[in-house]
Image (cartoon, rainbow, N blue to C red; front, side, top):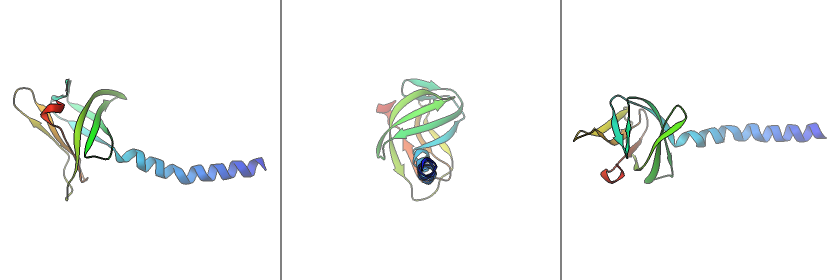
Length: 118
């Protein structure tokens, strides 16, 4: 009887695991930043970052993470493009480079950052 309950529980967990992984990955992407950029009050150095956001949009909170540590959290607007884009980090070059937009490679999602969020 115990083994039957264990098997049933294991089967349910195995069926639900792919759905949890799919939902988790939906609101995050990796991005490579080639030059130092200003994100909120934080200056991010060149490197690879995990970009995570909470919410379905259009207004979201974005976390920039590196090596498991959150370095910056800023508001952004999540937009959908009609066509797939290349990985691109767009900056405003007046003064220090302020992050304006991230287009994710092979995705239809774009995060835009306003001056007020900087």
